[in-house]
Length: 438
Ligand SMILES: [Zn+2]
Image (tube, rainbow, N blue to C red; front, side):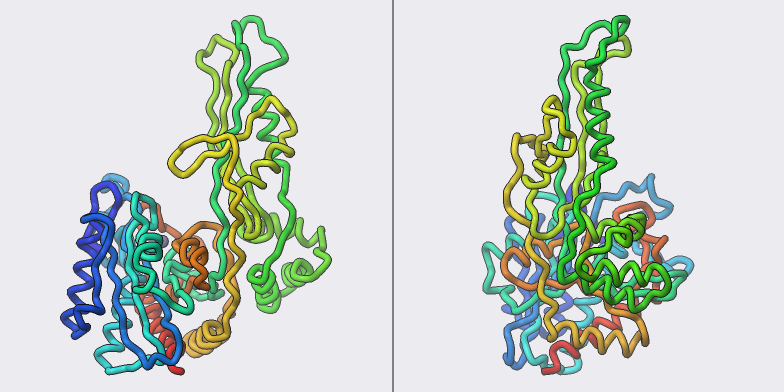
């Protein structure tokens, strides 16, 4: 936590080296502890714990980099690990140096105990998940695939460093992330000849753009379920009661019940599971208080369901605003604006493999009796996009619990409950042991 790994002023290599030292000291062979990357600041750590070779390896991934944090925005120094009132505070305490520490500790413990897994366990702690030049997972997949090749991948990033949602410290559900939505930004713009504001006309760039945005605000993309979200609603229906349970059962069936969809969609989280979503996030227009606007612009941010492409969504936005005077363009991650968007579709969910789900369910049942394990789709993006694109089924699993109303990842005073961290550590050791028992 004390090693700053932000993109602006930090150094991921320093963190990778610090963890590598622990592995070497624990007796891992030099060839099984690799620190490598495209440049001096962005090196990744890859460690291998050898197994009996009964199956292809399992790959564990976690990112070492963290989101920027300014001292003046925080109550404590974000780059000092501080324990206070039952919490660990610091940038990365949840997203996700806690997870990196848990995975590393688990492998070190297995080594110390002389445990021989049924398959090799590979741990990759990597750079630039949060942004930056050199995403470590992508770099390893393209340049050193053999080092990290596996049957499937476990990503400790989970939802954002956790998998268990709790209320006042009481766990409610364990989310097994098996798919994620795709992020896309669009720019909507209107131009107008403008004029003097003392002589207004009906044609006005700001009004015209506003109408288009209101149409998007009123629009709901079609309901679409996949193996993962259908499984989510089935499991949640079984764990809920009353109207909510009935509605969840109704949306998991076919044909989909429109009234049930409407009721569930009022909850922003459930809404995000049922639909592609688009929302206006920025607005800019006009050039003087006393002039008719010559230009108005907005950014609309979308989260796209598996099976669809960014270009498809752009076409849909054009249809929804239904005004040829509003230009809808695509904004790439680096800010470049282009007339059309990539046609590549979001990958389908990873299949729910029994060799992952069974040990997960048995470990969760042993530690948190009665806690439902629900398949889940992340509304945000993780490094899982790269491993899934490379053909590796990928699951977000982290035994850390976070209260629904206490999610500070990426924000100020990021923290994790001390008890949740140690519980998550215990969980991971038992889970990985169950997963590699045969
Ligand atoms: Zn993360």
